[in-house]
Image (cartoon, rainbow, N blue to C red):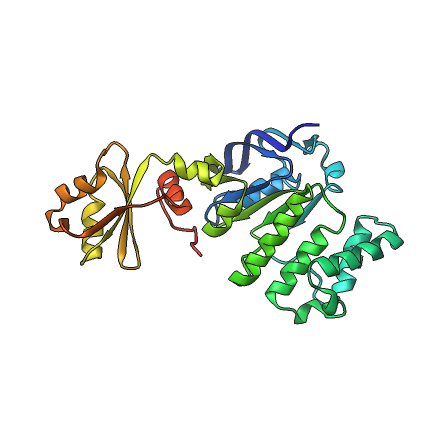
Amino acid sequence: MSEYAIQAHNIVKNFGDFTAINNLSLQVPRGSIYGFLGPNGCGKSTTIRVLTGLLNPTQGKVNVLGLSIPEQSELLRTKIGYMTQKFSLYNDLTVIENLQFIGQIYAIPHRELNKRIEEQLCTYGLDKLRNQRVSGMSGGQKQRLSLAAATIHRPELLFLDEPTSAVDPENRRDFWEQLFDLAEQGTTILVTTHYMDEAERCHRLAIMEAGEIRADGEPEQLMAQMGVHIVEVKTDHLRDLKQRLLHLSQVRSAAQIGVRLRVLISQDVTEPIEWLKGQFLELEGEEINLTRPSLEDVFVSVTGSAQGAVRQ
């Protein structure tokens, strides 16, 4: 058995003249949470649909759980779970009716299905909602039910396409704790997100832009290998200073964070604080500090833009 749940090599997906995925390659280790971070429209959802066999790639090779995709897509579907960004639930059915229906789709025997439903209701805090119609549930409750439905057949691999886009931060945090529990039990998870804090939780991360992977690695590793200095400046007239900084070729980006300006400076500049003071004499005596990089800094450095990615 391969150590990788997913192996994709040089994937291209074209829709007419539009290239949604451009020469994408990735390897997802078994039992890990692997994230796709990128703005809407960058190709994250299209990639998932190719990996699950819902779309045929224009070119390239895909192997998922030892199966060649799309040729063996039908065999794959019993081994994976798929939770989309729009809740795939039946609003007119109750919680328990939704779980029964999904279980029957996967041909789980009746006695075993009843046992699994009780386990899912308990695991995802839905026991007291078992007879509640989905139409009357909150976003967080629907999210927990969607995850319960996507995992009722105990998939080896779980695809989550922006699963937290419709819920509040507290429910998102609880949801991620449940993902770590699944990973601990051996489930491999591929999750797409445009939230920076979620991306930092992943074991490994790919940053996508315009259908291409711009960076791939452990979040801490990506932050350590950025190739820039991160400097924060606290002074008056930050907006004016930002515009002047952006005209310097050594400055990769500048963004205001509260009362400070966060500046990414090329590592070619050996003494970034002294260099800044030399460029702007009015900064002498102001508060200027080197600081650790964040995942947002990585995103900006590899894509050139913070637009589309959300800090929480």
